[in-house]
Image (cartoon, rainbow, N blue to C red; front, side, top):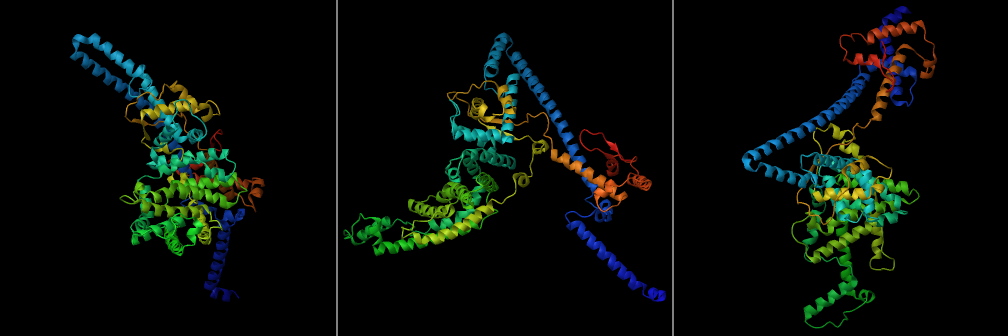
Length: 616
């Protein structure tokens, strides 16, 4: 028998190898597919962690680097404050040199010149509550406070959201101008001309939706509201890139409409009838025997009018379908800001009105996306650079008819059954409305701003260049006045960072009769926060990595059907010897290289308040 076994040893080895591979493959499949693989299954593959590129060493190094970055950010903040103080000293030194030069040029008038300069300094800085460019202490403090104020308004969207919510419901103060508030907010966010401002403006719109939706009782009430944040996001999404989007979306179709000299899409049966009468009189040179002033019912009895109406209706349907197909075929090219606001609208409305039919929520999305954003570029294409040139009244009327039909599709509104001329379109409108609704929902399926822009609370701290905002002096001081007069509503929770900054700025001296210079104030923003925001998620991730590392160490020494049984096992002398051998191998050569990953594995800190444990 053994001779038979030895003579076929190669086949035996192949069978054993096949069975082992099969068992290992099944075990590995359970490891990666089971939601809760057994401890034995995990133990069989613990050795892979030592050789993987995505092992614990990499996680430990990444977390250590992240903490190192935070420490460097704190150090950079301290150095930046020192540099700012040094800049002030240099500015004062240069000012003194200029004064000495002036004294040398006018030696005989030293005392008089000194008095004049002192008066000018007091007039332009100390006694002027609007001075921002001086090197005196008050002007520097005022400028720095405005830099911090704008930074807070950008990064804490609840303040501006409450202010915009108030502009629609109440008076902001004796000298506050609602329109100036809106333009100031757009300036605060740089009209979303770069990724940072666009990201912050989208966060503001999300906060505005949360604020506004508190005051509405039905989706229909929300749809009828004229909200300031919608104006902001629509206006911000009409820049150069967005105009190119409109041109690519509507350009060829609108050119086709306006270049058709004989195209007429008028659906007013009385107007069609009267035009037929006018054409007849122009052609014959005689008054028509048909009456000119008729009702819609009388006009429908005229065969020529109904035939012309049918031609207009067919042309309108065909052109509308062309526009509709082009719009619904466009998804990725739609600006991200519009899509993100639509997503937030959908989420907030579904949460607020959970019992409302889905169709009512989709109608609000359609009202925002089509009526407020796309429709203006369709009816006034020359204002959005969709086409070049001027549109005649007849051409604009044709575009208006297309726009009204698309608006009916977006809102899902059908014609009355009593309207015998237009009610046949109801089936087409119903079918198209469902397609439009699906498109609106598809647009609202977009990733969050943090993922899209790859930004978070630390982005400004990581950027070596400060964000810059350009405001006019009237915008700066009007904003201060408006915030000060409505602080109890804008920050109802009490004395926070906004109240502190407004209080430090002092009483606002703004008045609409004051003539401010036609210049631009360049504010290089700075954060008023002394401590960087704590990243609790990073702390939890670090704690999880350390916990997983300890579990792996336990699995390498002990065995059992599950972790609970393993943890309950008593520690034997065999386990202690195995652990000592493992430590010698795991933490070897640590003294030679204290910065290696092995050296970092040696030390463990579970929690911020616990002491560091040396595993060796």
